Structure formats: C-alpha cells, structure tokens
Image (cartoon, rainbow, N blue to C red; front, side, top):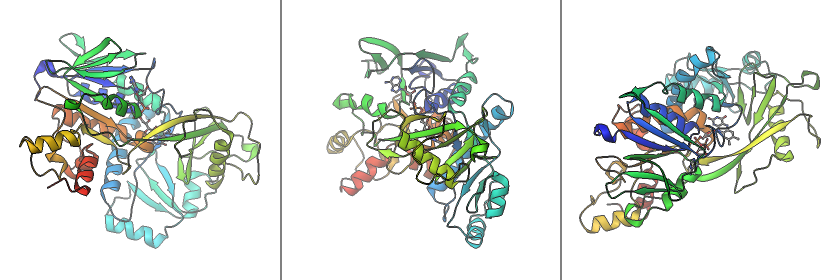
Length: 432
Ligand SMILES: Cc1cc2nc3c(=O)[nH]c(=O)nc-3n(C[C@H](O)[C@H](O)[C@H](O)COP(=O)(O)OP(=O)(O)OC[C@H]3O[C@@H](n4cnc5c(N)ncnc54)[C@H](O)[C@@H]3O)c2cc1C
C-alpha cells in the first residue's frame, strides 16, 4: 500500500472516464487533482445529450459478453437511483436490442445454455417487442432489464459531486483544475510526476492517470526513452447523432424505452427524439452534416420511430446534431491499468537480465511504476463509454490503490493495456 503522502493522483481529462476515475480514487481515500482543458466536464466524446447503456448477449458467454454485462450492471447500479430521484436525465427501466436473425428457439437455447436470469435478459417476440417499445419494430429482440439511457455530462457531474464533500485533514480530497490543457507529463528527479502546461507545472503527484481519450497517446509519445511506454493502440472514429422534435403528425413516434438495432433511438425529456449514430473512420470533419442526418433518420425509420423517407433529400425542420470522436481499440475493449514499458526497454532489460525471459502474459510485463506510484491509463472506451466508465474506474482504483479487484482475473487481463504488447511480442517471436 502506498505511503500516505503518495496517495495522490493527477487525472488528465474530465470526460466520463476521468470523472468516474476521480470518484473511484476519492472513495478509496486518495487525493485527486483532476485537470481538464475545457471549463467544465464532458465537453468532448461525453458531450452528447444522451446515450445508451446495456449488456450484450453472444452465442457463447465469452470475455466480451461477460465484460459488457459487468460494465452495464455497474452503470445501472450507480445511475438508477440518480435517475429515479430526478437528479440525472435518463431512464433505467430496460433497453430493447432488436435481433432480426434470432428465432425464438435459438433465443431460448442461448438463455438456457447461459443460465442468465430472466430479470437480466429476456427474449421478446415481435409482438411483445412492439408492445413494450411502442414502436412498430420489425423483429423480436432482447430486453436487457439493467439497461437504459442517460445524459453523460449529468452523470459526469454527479460522479464528481458524489465525492466533493470528502476531506482528509480538513482538505477536500478532490481538486479540479478547469480550462488548462496538459502539454506534457514529466518525472522529477524524486520520482514524482508533473502535469505541465508549457513551462507551468499544473500539478505534481506520485501517480498520473491518463483519461484524455485520443490525446492520451500524444502525451505518452513525448516521454523520454528511459520512461517510454508501449504506444496506445487507439483509433479515432467519428460519430454524429441527430435530434429533432418528436412531431407525431409527421409520423414520428416516441419510443417508450431506448431501442437499438442498426442504430438507436431514445426519447429525450424535452420531447425530442435522439437517433444515431454514424461511424466514420479517418474523418476529421467536426461539422454537423446533412447526409449524416439522413443516415440517422433512415436508421430511426428502420426502428419504427421515424417515417420512411423514400428518396427524400430535404430534412425535417429543427433537426440538430452533434459530432464527436470515439477512442477505439482493436479488440473493442477499454484500456485500464498501469502502462507497460515499450518493446525497446523490454528487450534491453531482458538482455541485461533485468526482466523475466518469459513475457507472454500481461502479468509478467514490467510497468512504468514503482513503489511510490506511476503512470496509468483509463481510455479506449470506444462506442461504449457510458456503459463502461463506472466499472473501468473501479478496476483502475484496484490497480492504483490495491482495492479489491471488481472483476475476475481473466477480465482484468482482457482490459490490461499490456495485452497488445504481449500479442505483438508473441506474434513477432520475442516472447519466450
Ligand atoms: C456519436 C457518439 C455516440 C455514442 N453513443 C454511445 C452510447 O449510446 N452508449 C455508450 O456507452 N457510449 C456511447 N458513445 C461513446 C461514449 O460517449 C465515449 O466512449 C465516452 O464518452 C468517452 O469518454 P472519455 O472520458 O474516455 O472521453 P472524452 O469524453 O472525450 O473525455 C476526454 C477528456 O479529456 C480532455 N482532455 C484531452 N486532452 C487533454 C489535455 N491534454 N489536457 C486536459 N484535458 C484534456 C478532453 O477535453 C475531454 O474532456 C458514443 C460516442 C459518440 C461519439
């Protein structure tokens, strides 16, 4: 366990990931300095007016399905009381995921094989799906009871509020620094880490957690060779959502609960329909585009919430949208944990006998951390950050503070940022 003076972390980035991480570390009694380049939380990837959270179901209950189920449950547990108390915009009464390929027999087979309780997931035939959603949906689907939607910025703010009253020795555990972009992280000769904006040191602590989505990679890439870590395998994927008044006369319909399939629809409390989202690789255009609105409206039409739009080029009045980027990983699972050394350092340490000869499992990989602290990451939440941030933050707290691990060991390994290094070394024949 870290010495009291070292129980302090700087977190860079106050989206869902950073706010969830701040909450989780403060709940473990750690001091946190949270630094955000904008003047408030959740202005980038986490800035949409609403997004879904839900479990997933696959034919076999593998790592991906188990991890997403655990993540959805963690979000639901935290968000539901806030939603029910009217503190958070959202709905936590279930989510319908349409599945045109599944038959009732196949669905029943999956449920029986996986022995998942009916109060977690149920198969609904088309008639039942139409009845529960209030939409003329075209197929049956899965009803995830611990699913729903929420307002990400509201969630981020509540996570900070939940710990802002916590103090140690009369001082608040959580400190926030708004409107400052970190341009570099540096290690001092004493082993502390500094988050800097140019020549100015914004904060110093024994531990730094990068929650700065795509920008995490850029900050790490500037570390000197003797502190270099394996590059984060992140890709930016553009997404645009659309929202518009639910004009019932024009054939729009309000979903009674969020409905997903190819795209998704949900009803915002101000009477607007939110539909989305596009998925565009290698696209840096920040504008809100008419063709993307059309794509989202067509998806909403397929889900039954919008009128069919044959050959329509005009858009409904008062349609608005928002564009943001998802930080995605190659295996669609987040990156949570201590950052591993890069290959050059590992190879040289192996040659000097300072690293184990076998490096084919994540737990054998040396990390950029010592007894006093180190460098950690919580990012790569991709298109599931609303679902993921709570559980990922609890897992981060385990890594940083030594709190009990909230997931089984194989799930922890599956989210470990060292997994890509191990895969590369194994493929390249370096691991022994
Ligand atoms: C169109 C779209 C639809 C989506 N729909 C859903 C959905 O329905 N369900 C779901 O679960 N997920 C959804 N997601 C994904 C989810 O929104 C993201 O995974 C999540 O918001 C990512 O949170 P984050 O904190 O990692 O990143 P961000 O919210 O981007 O936060 C990173 C923060 O770091 C700050 N920062 C970066 N660099 C620095 C620096 N150098 N110094 C200081 N601060 C810095 C940024 O300003 C930002 O506030 C969607 C995403 C998009 C784009």
